[in-house]
Length: 294
Image (cartoon, rainbow, N blue to C red; front, side):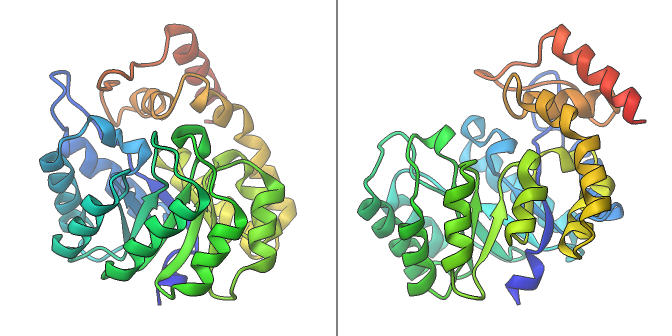
């Protein structure tokens, strides 16, 4: 069942680049093995953290196939399939080879700012044709539109294959409204590392994490402890990473986590424009906090 596969900590994989901006598949392989060996529950491919707006369609296909082959069934895989052209998404869902993919993560349409009815119709069209379960993704800080609880709940109740939402609005009241009124088998997943612990105490089933790229063992343990009701020990890990999580996003994502992974020796600290690496000041702060965490 997809519900059991999506509990715990999923990691939104970065896309490592070489100095010439080509994809560094060797580094990606190292990161994947790091996840598998250190407690990550599932992987999210071609999401926001992967810099997908700067990837070509061919590159995204290459990455998806590479991850599927590299994982070889050892972890569930979620693929980012979102956009602001509903007809194009429907066509992709009808023609794409989803072998090895367990679910799709589909962000709300961005830039064209649809109404709540437009959001409902968009996701209804996706749900009608998707051959695998659909995770809704609400991140108004990036898209310019906030999917309200009534719309999320309408979709959750009308479409059995709409199995979850990644909620990154940061609005506790909104997220709690979904948790209180959702169908029993519909899951709420945190979209923010920094508030994952409190959201689990409200009833979220886990997180799609950025910091998990670098610290899968520690952060997945925090999630697991919280899900088991061991809030005291989970809270200690949560507080341990508070400063580092803040530094992760101070100059945008994935600049922060790429700085972190570069310090740890996993990747070259390279992003594609319009994104740029962290400033030296932030990079040094990240390095110092990493040294303190050990």
